[in-house]
Figure (cartoon, rainbow, N blue to C red):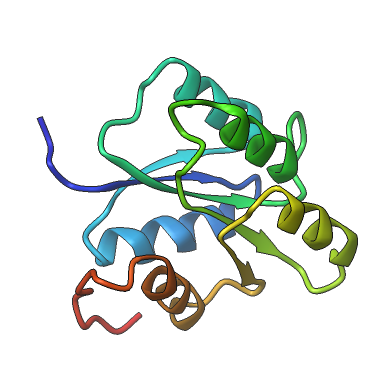
Length: 135
C-alpha cells in the first residue's frame, strides 16, 4: 500500500497528459491518468484512487468535459472539498466563469509548463514542501 499522495488527471490530449504525468511524478506524486472526464468519474465512483489529494482536468474533452467532472466532484459527499484545477486555454472565458461558480480551486493556462503546474500546486498546498526539480 502506497502512502504517496495521488493526483487524478483527466486530459484527452496525449502530449498534455504526458507532460502533466511527468511533472507530477517528478514532484513525488502518484498519478492516475484518464483520457476524459467520464473515465475519471468512474475511477472516483469506484473508489479506485488511493490517497487522492487533487484533480487536474482539461476543460474541453469528449464524453464528459472538465466542468461536468467538476460538478460531479462538488456534488459528491466524499470528494466535495477536493482541490480541483482546470487546464484551460485563454479563449475559454465562459467556461472559466462557470467553473468559478462551482468553486474551482484554480487554473493552469495552456501551454502546460513546469512553472505553471508547480505554481498552482504551491497555491493549493501552501504548507507542502516540493522537491527542487528542474523540468
